[in-house]
Length: 100
Picture (cartoon, one colour):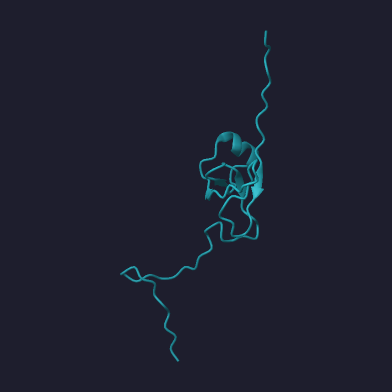
């Protein structure tokens, strides 16, 4: 009868996200693009975190579940580059008035 089969953990393939890329570019067997939206993946499982690392920014396609990491030169993907501006009591941004 059958013996014990060693099952090796599947290796995760990471693709690098191009600057400004928001849709998946994986082709199916028919040659069609997936075009699923890439969403930030905060809830990675333990197996993925072991292979990729703990504090890694990951994106996952919502259709085919392909994993992406952001490109180094893409600063828009982190969402952390913004200009701090003061807000008035009504919630509107305050412009600095330049006097001559």
